[in-house]
Image 1 (cartoon, rainbow, N blue to C red):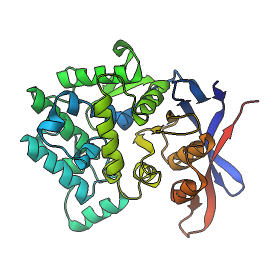
Image 2: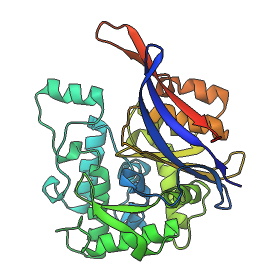
Image 3: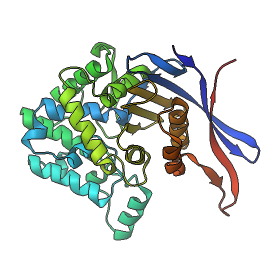
Image 4: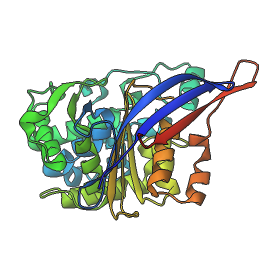
Length: 339
């Protein structure tokens, strides 16, 4: 039975609500049934970077993971949106070296590292960001590896008419149980194809991945990727980042992946409803309330306990300060049953 609710992120100033963001939510249980819903489960959303574990499946269907000897660290980076630290850049460069490719082959542009500390360190070094600092460089290196293993051209590997992207489109349709002709596509921030499906498809996919139940022929690949991201969660984001800390603080029981424009995908291998999946989209695309929203939903669903919730305090306790360091407001999440 689906429990319907309304989820809202509120930003306060003093005793007053200054801003509100509506959140769409779908959670599914081990049987794929909806157990929590806010908004419409069939609401289409772009998965953005929450799709990276599905995109990484081509490393296995192509044989690239075995051929190039990719380790957990490299596989986790392929699934990640990394913070752009030296360790992330080094792993992405190593992936390219193993497949005989160069930075010039990457079709993701350079940008300042996502991590604030990483960005400051790069600026202090006097170096300019490269394509390797792009948070998607691991994903793109993995795509090049799959092309190399298949004998497909590296040129335009990121475009929808390339056989790699057609293969990934098929992977996503199977994993999400959505006919591929109903999946809409566009171009992501990194230049690769981005996929749009009903929100429930994202929740369903994370439930299957976390529960070790990806459909054939992806079971072994899913297990290998799950081991990789939980063994090397720092490659998925970075120290102190939400995705990394969710997986680290729960001992790998949770799988977590953020996407741009307020998207998040989560799966748990065990919870009150067994293996389960959760997908959310902050409607206005704001990321400021992402941590508080994710943690509020995880507590509401009973997927984390009190000790884990407290260990993740920095991601949900969100006081707002002015430039004089005065506490002037907070970010809070409301989960209300309608009526």
